Picture 1: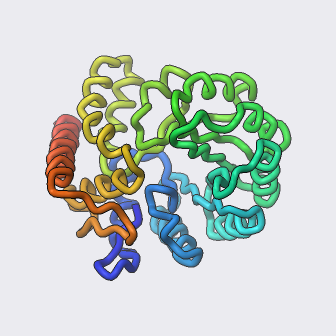
Picture 2: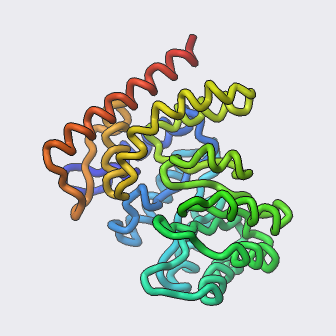
Length: 295
């Protein structure tokens, strides 16, 4: 998340706190500034500043991926090259959707980014209400570009496509699930290598994945299921998800305020009451998880 001061300027110190919080909670990598970072409300200079802060403060403790996608090839290539020069371990580009484009055009876009840099590339398929990009787009990129290594799927029922991408690329392309972590167990069942959720409850996700890896699947699902009410409610809208993640981070003492950049959703009191209750319940789950780990 991009934390803001009351005047909507970037709160750089809180961003550094967030980096430390994520790593301490078990994150195996960081990515910014993506949809959850309100990247679409940041200027290009601000996006670069966020990347610079996260890379510098991370100090190679975990890999840092820079989200560098832009509507044009030229802008994405320039942004990706700049991220590489700042020390990013990889870049994530979202397939441009400002205007309808075919698979051939999207392949050309992604290939141009891959060929412009040396670090790994992840293609984010952020088709939140649709079936996503064709599998052959990912596999053809993997054949042409040695540094195309990851797909991030944020689609309806992505499991079969996940399996096909992995199978048809002979395992070269690893798949991450996005969409706030909601489809974690769908991803695990279909061969995904991990998830990219919001940061507020990532230590609970880390606990879920540890339990899963230790063959304590029922325990993993029990922890995860306690997050579902918040996830289901928040993922009705990207802005709502960001608001709730920021609220969780604030209540956990990571950031001092849950300020959003305008325009954003403004909910009525009944919705705000639901939001507050769900956030409090999720924060309580995180506290229980932390206490179990410490004991």
